[in-house]
Structure formats: structure tokens, C-alpha cells
Image (tube, rainbow, N blue to C red; front, side):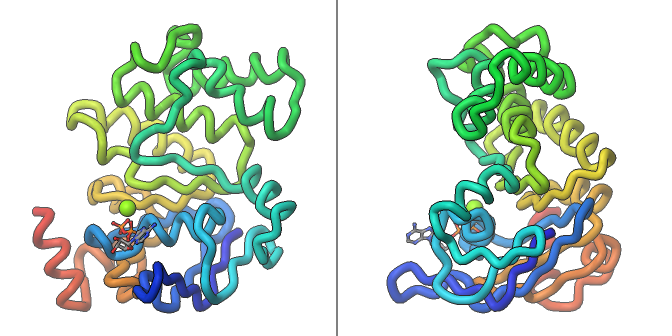
Length: 240
Ligand code: ADP
Ligand code: MG
């Protein structure tokens, strides 16, 4: 589904990603771990072309994407993204937020999109909030709306950038539950997270990023129970 080959990204002279190679197969859940500043967000942003890479290749669904405008529009339909800080439109109701992508980007039929949006809100447990404005929701509810909005584009893969990091601790579980359900349904997901319990249970593979390099990758059990590098040992130690 996604293949990243020798990806390099600089900000001015500063090399943030130093030759990343990774592959995500259809239906796989890959969690990315790493300290703040290690390049996790930049990696996700390069994969969906919110950032322009400097070197390397990005393949999505069997196609090498160079980054033309036409390609990027197509990629935006295939690759969804959920951010730490929700990014909902405050002037639109919850259901309108979910409809926005299909209606504006895909020019989908409004009534069908409305019905689909209600189904997605039901799926994330927020059908009763459909006509409310985001400001009246909790952070956990806002993030679930953001997930429904990503799903509305019917993407083939969804990237999550620390989806629960901005939430009060008691609201984290409801968002992780929705993500777990998506994983169970076979959604392909790349998730940057500090939720180790979640990564351990849900990920098919875990990647550890350190200073722009993947220094360790493997199944959750290997990564958590038998970290090979001191870097990863130290990282996991800090979280306990
Ligand atoms: P992470 O998500 O792992 O915390 P980021 O990918 O956000 O890391 O950032 C990696 C490094 O790149 C950091 O040193 C950060 O300051 C730098 N960086 C990120 N975005 C920009 C930008 N737009 N301009 C300049 N430097 C940036
Ligand atoms: Mg980040």
C-alpha cells in the first residue's frame, strides 16, 4: 500500500529524515515511536505530500508519486490524516465537517454524503452530536469527528499523528477504541503514538525513529520485550 524508499528531508541545512525505508501492506497497522523531534510528523507529512521530500521515492498503491498537483489531489483521497489537534472547521456543524471532504473534493452528491456522514458518526458513537458545533464537544469527541471526517473520503490508508496526545487522560480510551475497531475491520493505518499499550496490542509492526533514522523495527513483542538498541531501551524506560 505504501512504500518509502531512501527518503531524505531537509529543513534548510538540517537533515530531519536521513534515508527512511519503510513498507506498509494493505490491512496492516504500523505504529511509529520516537522522541520529540525525531522526525515522526515530518515522515507522515512527507508520505501525504504536506511536506515536499528532498530525495527518495514514495509509492502509494503501486504508483510512484512525484508530487504533481494532479497526483497530490488523487493522493489526498487515498491517504487520510488525523492530527493531534483535530483541525475541525468551527463554523460547520459536526455532520457538515464530516461531509466537507466528499462534497468539496469529490463533488459527491449532498444527500448521499449526508447519509454516509451520519453512518460514520454512528460508527464513532456521535450520531447524537451531528447537528452541534465542534466548540460544544470534548476533545475526545472532536477527535472522533476528525476520524469520521477522514473515513468519509474512503481512504485506503489513514495516517494518525499523535491522535490522543492533546486529550485529557480520561478521554484517550474512547479514541483508541474507535481506532482499534478500524484496525479490526482491516483498515491500513500508520500511527504515531506514545500509547504503548495500544501499540503493543494493535500494531502488526512497530518502528522506532531516532534522529531521522529508523533504528529498530519489528513485531510489537520484539520491540517491547527485547529492544536491541540502548536508544530504544532508554526510550521505553522513560515512559514507564
Ligand atoms: P516529531 O514529530 O518526531 O516530534 P518533527 O517531524 O515535528 O518531529 O520535527 C523533526 C525536526 O524537524 C525537529 O527538529 C523540528 O524542529 C524540525 N522541523 C519540523 N518542521 C519544521 C519546519 N517546518 N521548519 C523547520 N524545521 C522543522
Ligand atoms: Mg510530531
